Length: 473
Image (tube, rainbow, N blue to C red; front, side, top):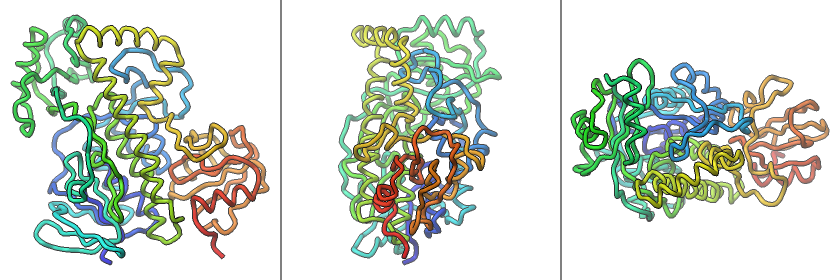
């Protein structure tokens, strides 16, 4: 085999997956059709769960240097409500950061760990058999790999060649989105934004005169062509009666409300992740986050298959866990897009939901959805903590997430009586009677989700075997 895993696409999902696989010394090749990184600067938001994952892998400090923190509020359909108190995370904020910076830092991390990245090269075809996948590349080259993962976006070549259905709704309305400077005074901008009924529409300041501008696109035109500043000016005048003096754009884009979910995330030795598996409107800023979280869920499981210790059903849990999460994101973006409609019925529902969000439980529930900190995988019957993430807590060695940097499992043990035994080559063990958990012990998977709660060694051994295979003898 030339490689253990070939990844199509070096966006955030592909780069994060490559880094996760390299933690386990998997031989990885990432193929990226673009010869150069993206030149336009688009600000994206990293939500709490993604920030937790970055902290686990020692990447958060790098990202914080380039980002701007804002409260974890106003995400759901842009309904302005304050952030709930005491969210179940140590990173209860949104990190606004240029997307090219995220992609560069993740690609650098993957390369530092030993992943190969080949630009100007794409998958043009593949054939799989019982032993691996023959991948055909741009220019006619062929190579062999044990697994192929399509992280190549909403128009994924890998998904299409695999023949996986992508049901859902096509794009019906388009929106212009960009960042640019404006000359209009803040009071005029605020008054016009409050006055305009057509949605989605806003101008939000970033500082230094730069604003995020969102306005309905009207006549869609050619979706393959990027919009121009003139397009923004014309649409702003049509919707608001003024173009606010917009000029000097940082980046301009057009997005639709297409909403689709792949029927399957895996066919044999070929898998899908990120936008190749799901597309939806950017309302709530969940897309990049969803893909990064796919990568962390898949990475250790695929590495376990390559390294030979994975239980038979482990790789199947990738779809079992992530497909329902994506389906929920698609539903909440559908709901948000409806709430942004100018239809009187939709606006009535929006007003009602705004009232309901004054109840802390409702506001907290919706923020938990958007930030993914409320995701709970179905790992069977057990305490409420089972299947959920565990927030970063103080432990005797420092911080909990610092112990997850190698992508291994972790037994956090307050009893001092438990052991990882024959799984110690895959699972670390910290005995800490003062650890800030209200249960005797927890077993954490490499993605930080709780795989077991209890104090009985026999029960622990069963759960270790379920997630980490046969013990070393």
